[in-house]
Amino acid sequence: MMRTVMTALAIAAAAVPASGQSMSERLNDYPTEARADYVFGCMAVNGQSRTVLSQCACSIDVVASILPYEKYVEAEAVLSLQQVGGEQVAMFKSAVAPRTMVADLRRAQAEAEMLCF
Image (tube, rainbow, N blue to C red; front, side, top):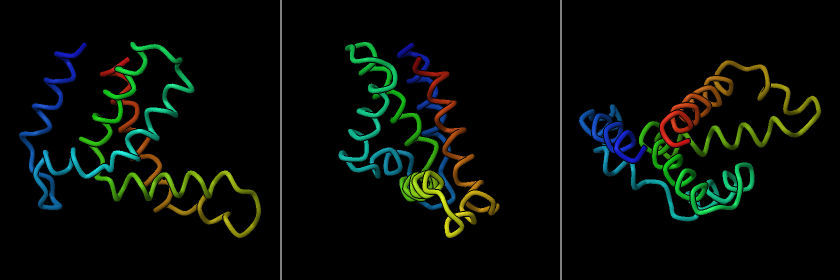
């Protein structure tokens, strides 16, 4: 499993993102608190074992390699707003841009799940 992750990260590292950041800069642009929050949430869903800790840590690393932190924060904000009911947040459920942000996050998480779990 670890070799698969390392291979995926090596392939991703070869590409230079359009934002001008190197892959190592993108991998490190997620603050520790954001990574820890992701891992805590992941472990809450998947279990509290050492194996799950490793899988969840792998997962956030993969997500970070795919999605810049700024885009991750935007998608998380949209997801939070979608949880709120009412007419005022309806645009976050139906507008194309928010749906695209969430779809990008979901794709990154799906890739992470395939590589890490």
